Image (cartoon, rainbow over all chains, first blue to last red; front, top):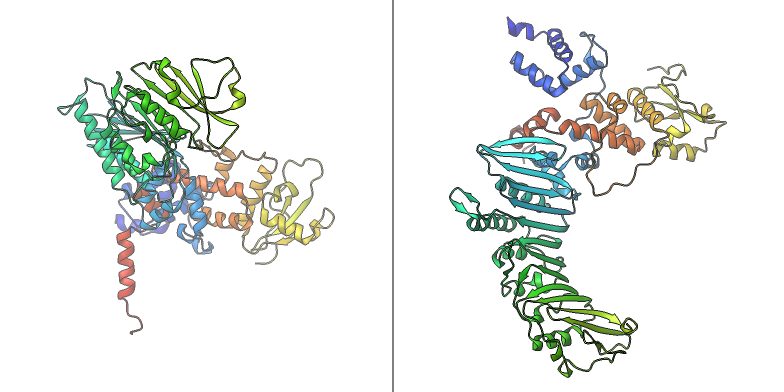
Length: 395
Length: 179
């Protein structure tokens, strides 16, 4: 009996009219309608057609739908319009759209992503991803992971680890074939007392950097195009989970910050062998001690590095190298063991005389320029080199 | 369908000074009047008007036929253009998150079912009205927001890849020319 009633078109339309009067949005109305009547006699397109007729005050249930002109479906729109629609979608909806069908995945992946920087934080509570200023927070709970999108609400993923979920989203973003990032920032900060599933902070850091490495090494491209890398790390292995996966040459700026409260040593031997290091132009190593041959930094146009100690011999070598690097701009070297300023003498080569002479500043001529000079400023624990002009020597 | 009497369906609102008016005929022979400021929002129509050399004096005597847009869509388009004719240009898109909320008036205007919206998009694309295109795309985007892949398939009538494959298989299995 019920089925017979439902086979009557006008009865069905009456049911849609009832749904319309309940004030739910159209899609929720449709879901309620199909659930309540346990029917799939009407598809969404037909439901929506009647719903909007009622919305516009047309309640004639006997309306002959054959009078309607043929209307296009989504896939009958020109592809450039579909692309424009995809561009309008927020990042999360684009993620969802990729899963709708292969066609959509291709369209989404053809678009140039609007974000220029990606930041990944891993902390005690879970993880956070920023696409420019667009923030996604992955919060750990006992039952799973709460994902919170800026302006876009939250959703709960039962049984999911927040860091793993962040890695899935990161992988999608980095896989984008047309992506060129201006900046990639990776920061892992865990409390030193942190224990999770029997693992201490050190073991957890190893695990997190392993997932980052797995993510970066499993992309659909050999290396990622990034101009600047900024990492907060505790050792060289953490650096090596990321640096080798970025495109050498495209990567022009490298920053390593120490994630430890006290200053610790960063081993550089493996890092300085990488092409990514050799082809970068700007370097900053912050709150780490390092110890490596200064010739390994001479190719940077700008750099800031702290050393445990700097020998005068290596300083002379660096000066002699920099004076032959037209691209060089400036650098700051810090040293824990003070330098004896008085020992800077003729070993450093012919100085340009100053009037009046200073103990702190030293100037050296570039081999093929009258105007450009190399300035070396030495205070006991800091040495600054700067490319400057003869005019600026006058103090 | 016979040509309707030349009574404009949409009246020009907010007459400032003495606007120059143009007449447009839709594919189903509905006639619309539209002000100069409003018609400038459509690059296609404005190019046409310029190329035809229409002036304030002869504009109303030379209705512009638009074969690709029916009366229903043209009505929405004229309403939209009249509403937004004095809008200031929006700043260029920056890298910051756009949290654009569709104004209530436009949301009401674009409360139509998806297929009508697609038809309006095609008309908007043909008439090259960037602002309306942006708004239509936003409506579709808002519709897709917070939906699962399965829900999006229902909304847009998209078969899953498996269904798609099955369809293709059955099509290729069906009897056809041998060879």
